[in-house]
Amino acid sequence: MQAEPNRTGVGRSAGGEQSVRDETADHLAGDRLLASRVVAGDDDAFAEVVRSHHALVVRIAGRFFRHADVIEDVEQEVFVKAHGAFAGYRGEVPIGHWLSRITVNACYDQLRRRRSRPEVAFSQLGPGGDDAPPFAGDDGMRHWRDEEARIDAENLLGRVSAADRTVLTLLVLEGLTVAEVAGLTGWSVANVKIRAFRARNRIRALLAEPAAGRR
Image (cartoon, rainbow, N blue to C red; front, side):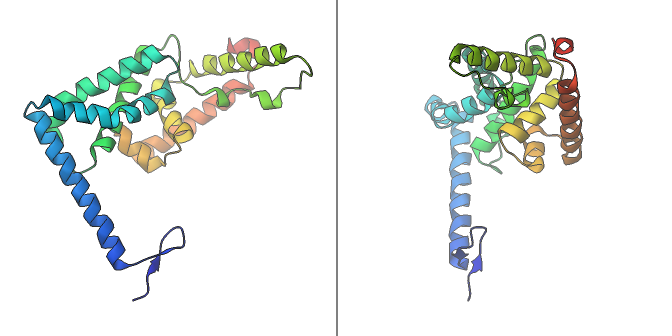
């Protein structure tokens, strides 16, 4: 039998596909066992979850927030929520994906609580330093110009809703598809598309305003 090409153009045999399915099933079975140990009160099992997925949670939170103390608060909230929610984990998706959903929701909640001072690391949505004229021989002036652009971008984001910032962060910074964003947030695909469209238009409109009007 001729192997069917995968996305990279390299042939994959039926046996290879079966091996991948078996590996996935084994991984999910291991996650279900780990979850059952957590539910049974095994502290070592929960410590294993934290150790294995700490970096994932911090990376996602770091896309939404710049300050270490805020990221740490989100991380603690995620694992506290996860510990109490393991009884409802059915092992249909890997624990890492399950925790990603909890993390995105925790970041969204944190954004809603921190409306007065946006922390989203979205500086590339502001007027970038690439468009600025060069300041030959004056690195201090260029640094000041770039910092001004970053602050300006964050001020703009303060005028975008928490939900819209969440969608933009996942689509732009994480590079996720609309379907993946819908899966992580629990919103419908249509809702994600509408929010993304409106959020991008809102950012463009704000960027078109005079600088003085954006502050």
